[in-house]
Length: 274
Image 1 (cartoon, rainbow, N blue to C red):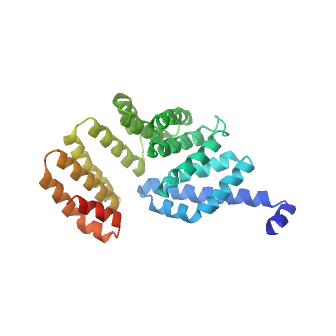
Image 2 (image 1 turned 135 degrees about the vertical axis):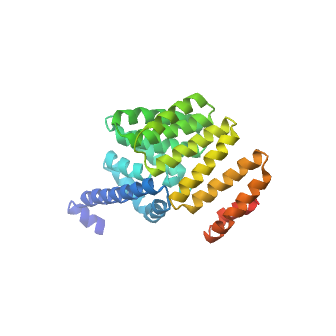
Image 3 (image 1 turned 90 degrees about the horizontal axis):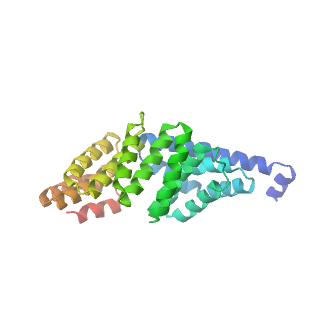
């Protein structure tokens, strides 16, 4: 009844547009904070709370052909879908919007393509993820936006590394690292990708040093879970380097923090390394 009255009054479309803009602004702010803190919990928790509203807003954007509005919201929530186990749904929404967003909207296309590439990679579709990452880089180069280019290059490098295209991965990573003014999230992600490339090339000694650097980065951001995760990965590298005592010592070092976090998955992971 209420919808019928709103439609009759010509207000339904107006309210739907306002709702989409509200969510777009909300998640754009949360995304900006995430990029500064490198901690996804706030935006992911809000996404879980607003999930049904997000679905309604995106569906409305499609029905009204407001692809840019929907695209901006999708770019902000990015890979939050994966955190809820909804990677397939996230890919479907992004695919629908990308199919209708003009090439001239290069920034939105760059950010959506980067997000789609990440979701595809998380689901094991590495070849397609790599191709989409190439598109993301191409669109990002048109924007003049260093942040968008850095994120796209990082995603490209990540997939190139997993596909053993190490030289391509190295070039993209070098370019991304040279972009000035990278935010904490991108800085951490670039270090993670550099670590992956270093490990896959078999340089465990350098990887160990880089995990120590990553731990320092997480501690500077107040991210206990990130620090513990990096310490566990470092412990695995030390074990592979023939340093089992160092590996066990790292697990003991982070055990109090893992217990204090009340994160059962993290605690289980730490205990399994002891």
